[in-house]
Every structure is written in structure tokens, then in C-alpha cells.
Amino acid sequence: MGINTEKEVEANLQIGPTSLGNVRLYIEADGVEIPMDFTPDEALEIAEEIRAAALMLAGKK
Image (cartoon, rainbow, N blue to C red; front, side, top):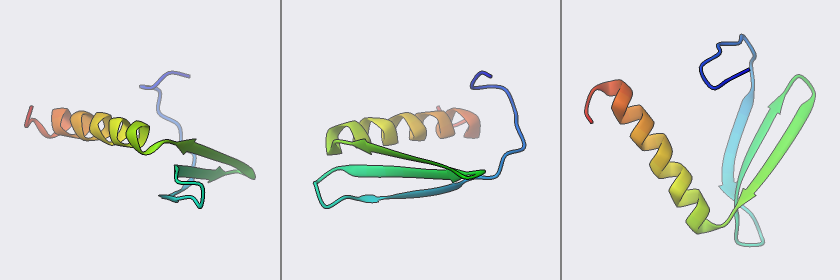
């Protein structure tokens, strides 16, 4: 499965700070839980990539 392959899977996404100073992306789907922790700098890079992709799709870039 690649990034451009569509699937009909429902998932819950939570994003927030941890008590250890990281940013956690927490994904839960079909009984699977995936916690992913990132440093603040890594989280900002991810946010920039998400924003750039959204802008490309919106035709603003």
C-alpha cells in the first residue's frame, strides 16, 4: 500500500504534548494503537510538510 492508495479504514487521531516534552501523534484503528513521539523540532517539520501538501491540493502553491 502506498501513500496514494485509498482504503476505507476509520481511525482516531489524537495530537498533544507528553509529560516528557515531546509531541505525540496517537492513532487508533481496528484495535491497533500506535503512539508516535516526536521532539518539538520534528513536530514542526511534520506540520510544515502537512501544510505544504494541503497548499498544493488547494492550488495555492
